[in-house]
Length: 539
Ligand SMILES: Cc1cc2nc3c(=O)[nH]c(=O)nc-3n(C[C@H](O)[C@H](O)[C@H](O)COP(=O)(O)O)c2cc1C
Image (cartoon, rainbow, N blue to C red):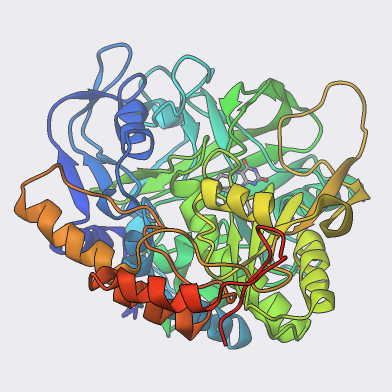
């Protein structure tokens, strides 16, 4: 085997095991009705993000009671940020730099003659019939009760530009239809799937078939390229090499003229029909609704090549948070920040947060700005995030850095007390519908809502005890053996600018039991003829 600088999926799972991030399930699990719902509980069961794990299922059965000897792993790339960071091989705060340098300095791949992904080759008649071809693979159903087919989700779908020869790799779902046929869904909207642009070129040339390779279980540095948005025409394999710090090994497909990652687990080779389309879905989508049946691209399988001991990955997507939202969030948020700070030069921006639960990153964007950032800069930042990506930023809110963007209550608090709607809110026309449930009544446009919920001037402190008192009380709480606490920010009071050292001193005297001294001081400030509630500021 050719040497390489990156782990494959097996080595990555070993690393997750060492880090305590892999849950191995050895009992029998039905891939059609139990597998995804079991993993789903870690996203809807009130668990902290840090406690989520990758789930490796070693004993798979299906709705017909069949048994499979190929394991399935869910969440192996991004059940949480720690898992993504393990796959990248860098701490979380270095992920952006790693992406930046990989995009700036891609490393050309190396073509090898022999590859583990072709240890077993199934083609021709061996692909046809029940229990053969695709039907031999334990592909799970993602949303039992709604989905109409087991669907490939953790894919890297490779197609080639018929004019330039440059390959594209995207994560697109594909529904199983027959042992030798599936239907691939590539987004056709502007900014949609790179593979669809190839499909259009094949159609224009009159080619009735587009060669395609659906890769399952790439080495993590390659798998991460699937969902990442890179400029059209950039060969993702070079960028994957940049992530890995060395060339990615590729091997020529057995039946299609495409190069595929040599260390992949399984490669499904085939020809996409550019003439006919076939109904696909319902399928639970990453925008959190079920995509209803629509026509998509049938693919005739020409070969399935695989390792002798493959593992099949499956992404848990649909309603966020999910593996799909984590994998996109970790890659996208730094792109937004760098767009505002580096491209637009807006200094006061500290962070951009794409809201994840239910809204799935696409609809609500929070910009965290330093206190005192000029209003014009805040608005440049709001326009900047609203238009950076066609799919994201329908509702954009700017807040100060004491607001936790993960806490919707805190966001509402900022809007409630720091925003004057007639001055601080704008709605803008002409937004595309983006990724979301299709509207059945025509092609009408969506629009954009921008809100400046930052403080426009100093405000009085948040009325909770100062941190030192809350910390002291927490120690007592624990000493008393009261129920475990999960502090929700804000959990202590802090200054919002409108506060004086004299008041700090008075509060200190009060907690020291010296409030009578405060009384003597205020008595000296008595005045005649003022209306009650008139403001007083000590010298
Ligand atoms: C779990 C998951 C499933 C996805 N499914 C699809 C899909 O079915 N079709 C699609 O066009 N994009 C899908 N995407 C989004 C694309 O992978 C993403 O837009 C990517 O940038 C496409 O690569 P490309 O720009 O090379 O086409 C999915 C992303 C994830 C993380």
